[in-house]
Image (tube, rainbow, N blue to C red):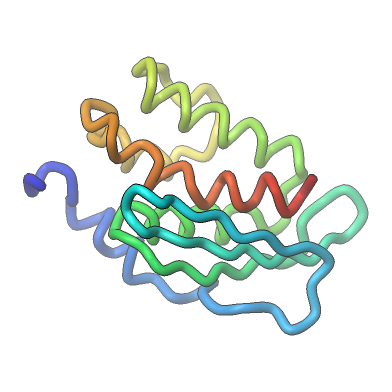
Length: 136
């Protein structure tokens, strides 16, 4: 992969462990796998009302997958289920169609350079898939 695919900001996110690990007590949990590359993400969530109180992720994956899990876990805390769905739809549209993030978490712009690499879209979207499964 080229250096353009892994800018310093993305590498820093992939190294961020502030929301890594598992929650002993959680209301929901889901694991998503990408059999093409071997990435695996488990998301644990505690809920409060219609919102998300706490999130942890256990991620075994590439830089893109770890960075996406890091952003998702950090930004999901205090967010609603609807905000998670908006963020997932926005990052998917950015990757697949080149759309703007339209009010979604602006930190996701770091994945802008992944758009031309269709085989890597699944790496970025895997944590969102695990979160969606956990919340359903």
